[in-house]
Length: 243
Image (cartoon, rainbow, N blue to C red; front, top):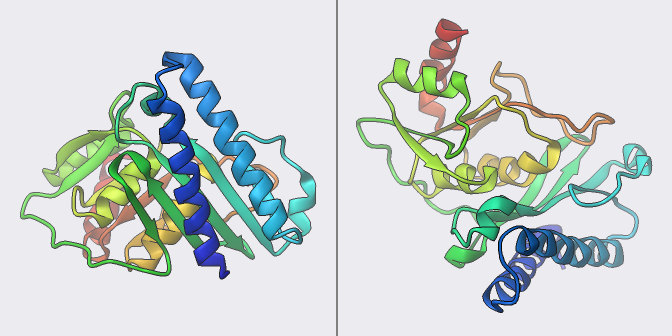
């Protein structure tokens, strides 16, 4: 099984597990989120260790092991990206399975289980054209001030949404055109989405234009920009204007 097939298979399977747990009706609210995180993490971590024992591994729900820093290939996973949305039985949550090679988000799969979709880096789909008025996807609960200011400068419509993975995939699916985040994230929040977005020929970077680098000792990776290449210059100009 190729790395891309493995990423997609695991993201899809973890998503199916999460849907089964949620649809059982046995748990609710915070307890559902806690159970979902634990179950999906255990499956993903055990499966990756069995299938790729020589690779490094970093998961949001697993104690970090510094051995990964010596590995060229490191799997970076978020078992439930958007635990709050998952527990609230919304659709805007995701499962991330990404592979960073020498710090680059090389391969990834992002499952959107409630929507029955898996987007993967090895099977890009056509990105729909942008409308005349751009749409910027932002956090539904705490939109970053920089994103709101840039949207105003561009005259863009704000599209509130839950998880980072759902936001990133919304650009690919034509539901939004720009995802700009500056409110704080970790490597597992963006590795798989970045790999998938890059494969779809989208612009992917930090908000200052520098590359996203993964498998660092400090997993804090606080900002992210994903957008269509033709919008990069305008977004960067707006960022400079508001910063």
